[in-house]
Amino acid sequence: MDREEIKSKIDLDKIESRIIKDLPTQDYIIDDKGNAIIRLSPLEFKLIEKIKDLEERIKDLEDKT
Image (cartoon, rainbow, N blue to C red):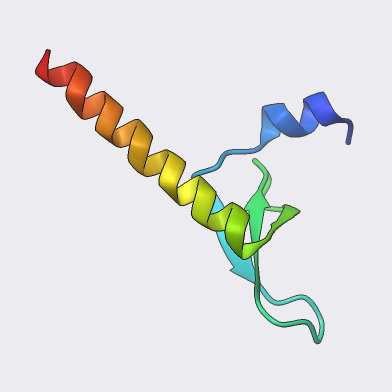
């Protein structure tokens, strides 16, 4: 997959933990077909969660105005 195709298929709301062979459980971004395509480090996972929280707060503030 090229970069643009990956951008169009990922959804940051679809993050799952998966075990692959003998490796420890890791978090992956899941594409529209359910395939684990991008492995996330713990820092990246935390950043995505923070971004989601901030987007929700922005939406709440916009609704109040």
